[in-house]
Image (cartoon, rainbow, N blue to C red):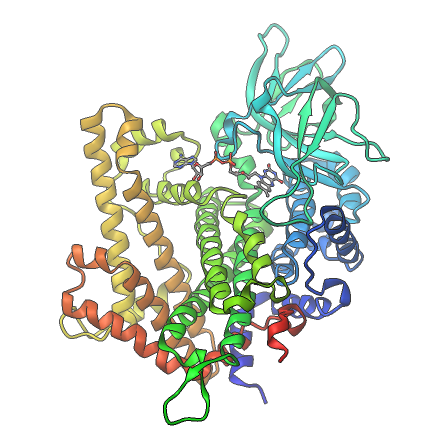
Length: 639
Ligand SMILES: Cc1cc2nc3c(=O)[nH]c(=O)nc-3n(C[C@H](O)[C@H](O)[C@H](O)COP(=O)(O)OP(=O)(O)OC[C@H]3O[C@@H](n4cnc5c(N)ncnc54)[C@H](O)[C@@H]3O)c2cc1C
């Protein structure tokens, strides 16, 4: 008979549960046993070997369309790479670079000839590639990349060049050792007959960088980023181009093309919109990174909770036994809210993957849906990766000295996930992107604007902020409609009250941010200064939005759980998530009179109360994460 933990697992596993089950089985193979390999050569060789196994087992095919030799199951592709994070984050990242980023660029930015030539070999790892976007000088602002790809009509070639030291490609996964080809993002410079050469904006080019022996090709200089804060199995490196020539056909030309005579054409006229459309097709990487961070946090919480259920410290008066550390309220307060947040984010991530799958599997893509997807992906990437960083650190401390030993996994999880807050978009920059989408009520024009243009736009058009509900719209509405409490006497365990508090905070922050932006614009004159004046406020609004979206996803997750006992447990966990968010932002709620002093105290009591009621279920809750035993790999749990 299925246990409550089984029901929790089914609820969390969501639509792609069969994929998760398959990966769980594969991860029990000896090749995927957690390992600590600080030696770079050994770690990189091991990661490549693991990838060979994945390629042979057909892992990559889901990410590519049927016409190009794949299966076209986008959700399965993202889910399986996310699950790899439970075993080894270097493997997850390297697989993500090869199939998600390099492969994704070929698949989404290329056309038939590119698909024909490269997709099968890159699926099978006969062609190892890298994704060379970031430069030493520009990471977050990739529209300002300096690498140039200048078309030479006489030879029918593009000349790829790094004109300045800051144009060097930097941190690129695969560039130090294994990649033979790079998907290089560069300013496309061309001139049609009778025209002066000009930049048409950033485009992507396939540039061979190494020969079969692994040596740099003429004009290419690669170098190694060496030891990093983590991810030893990923060979991050740098690339400098000295007038490297590639055929015209190496431009990935789905969104912009150059004819033999140098004339430029594109189905998207506006350069900004063109650029953001191109980048938008690569959203899958961001979704995967957020999901993988969430998976890593679940591994850490599974380890630390199991440890807390066996570790004893200090005598209990009148008892021969020492106290289990999980029985200390403070320990419960450290771990259980993080478990609750992991559930919340997991449900939100599942919704996101479903939307990604549906949008990327559709024949026609609605631009508004695509933008909403990108904003949601940005927000959840930030939320998941910040959560992972915080949760894994807490888990490390919660295991005391044992937590600091590499044999117990937590330090490697911490080191490897650290950079997830930075790559695939820095979290603060991504949060800003969420805010822009919200504040401009999803207006079309805003998409590609820099801060100055955007400020001008926002100042004139922000009116009533459009508030979009998530997929859980009806359930949420019903809960709100039947809510029967108010600020004075309502219970903080009432879901309607919690939803209302999250929603009110978001609405207030958004509308006041919009008003302040307009005021600042009038006062400051300079659009940049005006925006900068309220930047912190704008980011708070976006964070409040993400919190609300995550809470609503949790509510929908509970609703979809058919088992009563599991649904009740999820309900209590959802209380804990909601009350913890409110407690962490108590000052704001009180300052803005959304919480009286008495009620603020009740929030703290509520968190304690839920910690106490959930304590007996601690093991069940982490069993619901269904982290394979083989990947828990913590020696301290064996005793
Ligand atoms: C291990 C690793 C692997 C990587 N792999 C790849 C890869 O395979 N391919 C690739 O192309 N790139 C890769 N990257 C690069 C990564 O994507 C960039 O580092 C990232 O986009 C951030 O860019 P940056 O380092 O230039 O930071 P910056 O953009 O310089 O940001 C520095 C700080 O400034 C802040 N900041 C920036 N702009 C603003 C703003 N407008 N408002 C407020 N604050 C701001 C940020 O929040 C951040 O804290 C990798 C990086 C690492 C470390």
